[in-house]
Image (cartoon, rainbow, N blue to C red; front, side, top):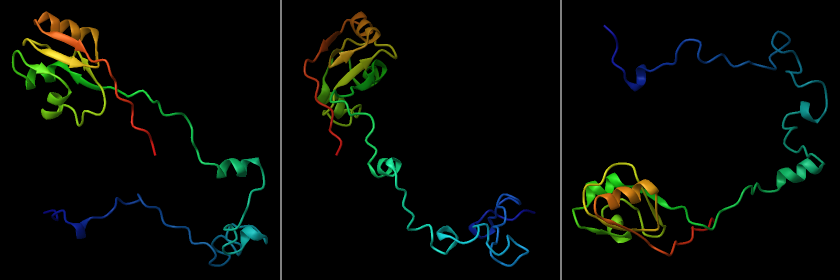
Length: 159
């Protein structure tokens, strides 16, 4: 019969945690210098705390890493046509407010792009900032309209 798995019966697999090397315990284990070499700042206790590199490299290490850039163009939030098919009835007019209300968008701050994954059988009028070619085709094939909204909001700036 095996023990039940509880917090006090847990243990690691044998050999998964190697024993810690004990240094500075006489000549039988790592000798008198404990692998630090003989004399010098680095051999002393706390000797590595105040070491300073004097070079261009040290200057580069102190400068904050600000690589790349933040685009001011908003990244459009994708919504597939299969979600429109599921959440909206026939003849519905779909805009940003309706998408937020149904939970397909978190907020109306960013633009939306309708993608063509799935099928549309309902006649929908969809207002969005962009459409993929397959999404536009499937909406229009079902008898609906794909209307492009002109203004795309700016992306939020990083602080």
